[in-house]
Image 1 (tube, rainbow, N blue to C red):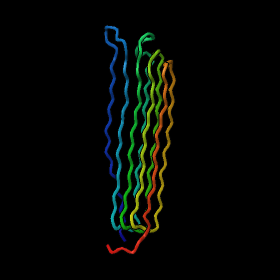
Image 2: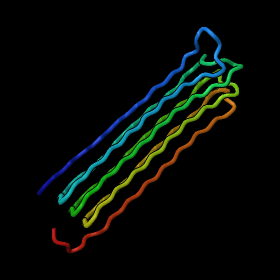
Image 3: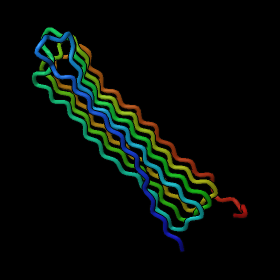
Image 4: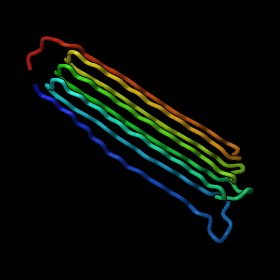
Length: 171
C-alpha cells in the first residue's frame, strides 16, 4: 500500500504604495496583489490524499490617503490556481480549498476607484482511477467602504472535477 501526500505551492506577492509627497499629486494609488499556485501530481497511488489549502487576507485601510479633490485608486487583487492530478490511482481523495477576504476602506477617494478582485481556479483530475472523491470549495468575502465614485467587488470562481474512470489498461 502506497500513501502519497503532496503539496506544491508557489506564492508571489506584490505590495505597492505610492504615498503623497510634499507636492500635491493629482492621484494616489494603493495596491495589494497576491498570486498563489498549488499543485499535486500522483501516479499509481493507493489510498492517496491530495490537498491544497490557501487563505488570503487583503486589507486597504487608508483613512487619509489621497485628497478629497483628487482621484485615487485602491486595488485588492488575489489570483489562486489549485490543481490535483492523479493517474492510475485507487482510493484517491482530491481536495482544493480557497478563502479570500478583501476589505477596501477609505475616507478620501472622491472621484476615484475602489476595486476588490478575486480569481480562483480549482481543478481535480483523475485519469484511469477508481474510488475517487473530489471536492472544490471557495469562499470570497469582499467589502468596500468609502466615498469612491467607482466601486467594484469582482469574484470569478471556476471549479472543475474530471474523473476518467477505471479502465483495464496495462501500467
